[in-house]
Image (cartoon, rainbow, N blue to C red; front, side, top):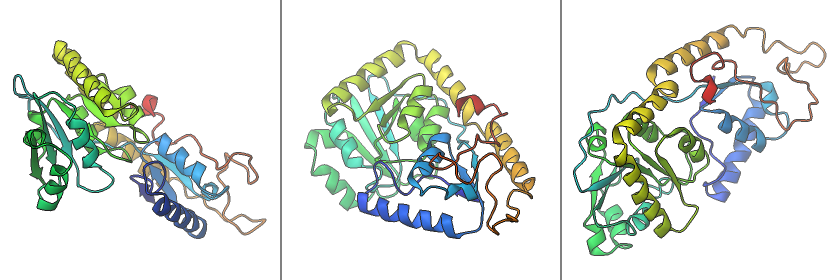
Amino acid sequence: MFTYHGLPFGPGHHPVAGALSRLIEGLLLHMIPPVHLVFLNHRMAHLMAGRMPQGVLARHRIHILENCSDLRPHTRKALPDVRTLVMTGRTGRQKDYEYAARLFAHLPENFRLLMCGPGTESVSFQRGIAGILSSDTLGRISFAGPLSDVRDVLQQADAYLLTSRYEGVPIGALEAFEAGLPIILRNFDGAADLVAIHPCSLLIGQVDQAEDAHRIDQMLDQFYAREHEFSEKITKAWSDIWSPGVFNQNACNLIAAVLNASKLFAPDCDHGDPAPHPDHHRNTADPVPIQQPWCTDALPSAGNG
């Protein structure tokens, strides 16, 4: 059984590296024996299907197992008259902290930005951020480095910011859900799915950064006008889909389904090849057959798949 926490190709990846990764992935899936492939959501599974040569995934069994977070956050204690945006994650091309810095330059002076994660403590990284900002704007940014416990920084946050070029299902965003925080996501592939579920969220990167900054300020005005109501709805959305209890049930059903699939990869008596999944035909017109997930449909998160 193999799990995909993200795909090594697709929107946001470097074109050359993505094309090479796509080729290697297709060859591996063609050459290896039939296996169980586990994706974080339906969108990721269908993207994989659309990018692989026809028939490659028909040899394998596909499952959906949603991600989860288990942060158990502290009670929020945001500072009055200050609006703090928090980012968590390692530095590098994927997370695109430089994009966040440029966006932050358009926000009002009462905003603060807290950059956390491996690499944010390095002098070279901070020098790079300083090179694209005025000294006044840079003075409103804090660099926390890697943290053993992100609950303290989320406790003082007014919103969670993620400016990645690509993601799977980011744990940091799920932790922000769990903490009852508004989220601001760049329009990476899959971000719209999270924003659609979150009661107080924003998708950025589709207009200029000055306009996005204005929308962020407006969203937080709306959040604080109904803070308690929004926080409860945000946490409820997390609990229904990404809580440990839901994940544990989904994972148990996944394992049971895999263990009960002893006949799935029986040899094909006519051709000596692995038999396709019984729900599909060897010459199907679909690019790659993707059956309905059999591990989550009956569980609490199924309605949100």
